Structures are given as structure tokens and as C-alpha cells.
Amino acid sequence: MKHLDWNCRGLGNPRTVRELHLLVKEKSPDVVFLCETKCRRERIESIRDRLNFESCFSVDSIGRSGGLAFIWKKDLEAELDSYSHHHISISVKSDITSNKMILTGFYGQPATAKRGESWDLLRLIHTNINNPWLCVGDFNEILLQEEQIGSNARPFQQMEDFRVALSDCGLKDIGYIGSKYTWCNKREGDGFTKSRLDRAVVNEDWLNTYAINQTYVLPGQCSDHNPLLVVCGNPDQEVVPK
Image (cartoon, rainbow, N blue to C red):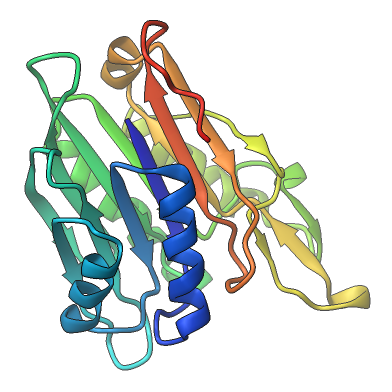
């Protein structure tokens, strides 16, 4: 199973849509999660059709801010589990077991003062989950100081709150292959900053279902965030992306 995740920073730009189309064509994901779409349902549906996917669920942006979308293939048996302005969870029939899997696309509060609301939301989602769970997205936070270069050091408590939230939810980071950093502010000189804001985390049930869980950090052009390709499978399955 392959999951493409991208904070695309708006789908109004035709270049961004073309880049998304190329990503889908090259990587063949089963499901795509997009955050900061900055558009409404009608636009998401037109992009779904262009990508030759069958189904989607989206949360409209508020003005020019936010916006989320899940898009998935016809042969993926999925239904909506829950949603808010900062997450979408879908329930998916597993490709290897009879269990339902929960896929959550997550978008952390961009404002530091509201970051605690994100961790409260994550805990709330967790209370209703008794299945294998994959949560992927832009958390807008780092776990360790070495996940950022440039700018000022992150306050310890800010990172600790994120670590505690993941621990409370039984979620573990599955690491990455490729660039250590997933976001860059594209400034020069002293103002230059790169951070690992985007990641995939899973619970123990997910690890017991899939022996192989790999997150590839892909190159990107049209956003300040890199796309992620999360590939999950077992040794008898082909899991290496194209």
C-alpha cells in the first residue's frame, strides 16, 4: 500500500497541479492526502478526475487558509471515519487481513500558541481507534532539535509536548529515506531555516500488520514542503517505489 502526502500550499496554481499529477503518475499511490489546498470541494473533485482517481473527501479552506483532501483509488474500499479542519480519517479494508485500517491525514496548527490544540485533537482521534493506525501529514513541529537547522532553537517544552502527545496515542515515527528536512523557508543568509515538519507515525497494531514501513522524502518544486511517499507491505509484497 502506498500513501502520498503533501502540504501543497494551494492548488490554484496550474504548475502545482501538474507536479501533483506527475507525482501520482510516477509513484502510483493508492491514496493521496493533501493539506493547505486553499480551495473548495468543486476544485478537489476536478483534480481527482484529472488524476484518474475514483473517490475523495475534502474539507473546504476558510478563505485562503487551510483546506484538506483525501483522494483514493476505485479498488480501495474506504469510508469516512472522522474529520475536522485539521484532519481527515478514513477507514480502509486491509489488503492482507480482515481488519479495518485507519488512515489519518493530519495538519498541525501553524500558530505556535495553538499547537496544544493539535495534540488535544490527536488524543481525541486516538480515543476512537482500536485498529491499525497510520497518521501522516504536516505536524508543524519537530521532535528533536537536530530536526531543524537555522533560525532560533525550538523551546524544549514545545518539542516535549509533541513527544508526549505521540506517546499518549501509542504512535511511533517510522523514520525517513532521503532528505532529513521536509520544509524550507527558501530564504537566504541568516534567515534560512529547514525543518522536519512532515512525517508518518503508526501504532503497534500497524507495525504488527506490516513488517515494512518506509517513508520516502521526495523532491518538490512548487511548495516549501517536500511530498512524502509512505510505502507499507510485507516481504512477499513489492514495496519499492518506482
